[in-house]
Amino acid sequence: MQISGSIFPFFLLAFILVSGASSAADKNIDFLECLTLQFQKSNSESDSIYTPQNASYSSVLQSSIRNLRPASNSPRRPFVIITPEHESQIQAAIYCSKKHGIQLKVRSGGHDYEGLSYISETPFVIVDMRNLRSISIDTEKNTAWIQTGATLGELYYTIAEKSKTLAFTAGVCPTVGVGGHFSGGGYGMMSRKHGIAADHIIDAKLIDANGQIRDRESMGEDLFWAIRGGGGTSFGIVGCI
Image (cartoon, one colour):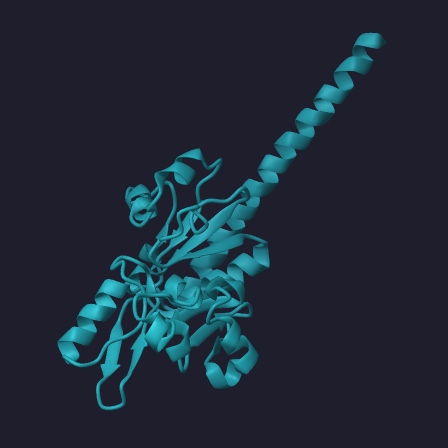
């Protein structure tokens, strides 16, 4: 009787651990099935979805990691990486992560040296904005629309192609992503005279937690103020600025 009593807690613990692991795996599978279905509904190609079984998974994950230390010490890696090519794919990622309780991380240029955009202690997926990097400049109105996967170097180069007199106040590192930099304020060498990047943002397209696409008017001034310094992934995913 003493032996049976000592073995019982072990079996109970083993059952809990196995059940927990199985539940997490099921949740991951449910998310992936949901994502694939949502992509099909929007006629999107599934080649924007990477899992550890894909040959390109590691290269996509490491493509914009600037500090290998947190990545190598992380207890887990994303079980899915999504590289959206249009807004409907971002909406699908938000919808499925919310439905299945999966943590969603957004990566633009990857310049967060603590690895905030690519490590986590809980199961998570990455929305990598690398394919959303178009830049449209109107030199007559002195305005531009920039997708948040673009880098500062690409922005400055495009401005220089269009004009020899126009510039934009932001950081100096060319590989910094526009999305993270601008939504964090955007300090640079011209900030003392011209202010920070966020001071010059006059509109944005945000995919909110409900998957709705909102511009400045529809999101309201409070939220518009918050995404220009409060961090773009705090309130949704900023797709274009």
